[in-house]
Length: 157
Image 1 (spheres, rainbow, N blue to C red):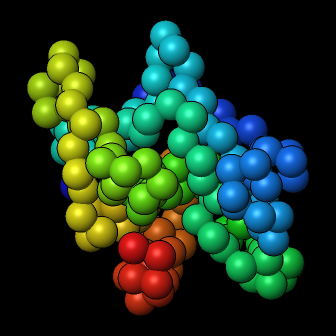
Image 2 (image 1 turned 120 degrees about the vertical axis):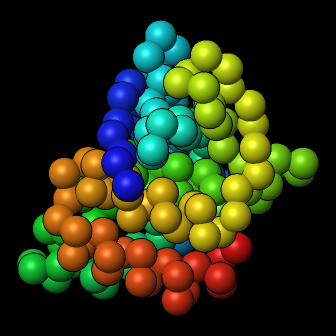
């Protein structure tokens, strides 16, 4: 399976007031993802492009802070480790917009046309795995993330 990243996007933290206004509380930090309008962040897997919607609210994969604080673990398992890879995964899990639950923008013709499509949990989890490797992460780290989301992601799906 070949995977690569193109384009650009960034995530900005929401303020506590913004999180409260959206009903997200303040127990964890949430972020708003924005695509570069002229060069959208895209994960290509075997010729199929995957993009997230603009203004996606996400939490960088819900990695527990306890794990991020360990010196050894924090290098590979923090919100800053693979910021591109967690965005499509979080978008696949997103259920906040009625009628658009579990969707990504997908192109099957090299980027000529894009359509919003529902994705399965398995697809979202696999995008995280291949996205980490495409982002330069070690395969053992990608497999570890994948193992955890396969085991515990059902709590959030």
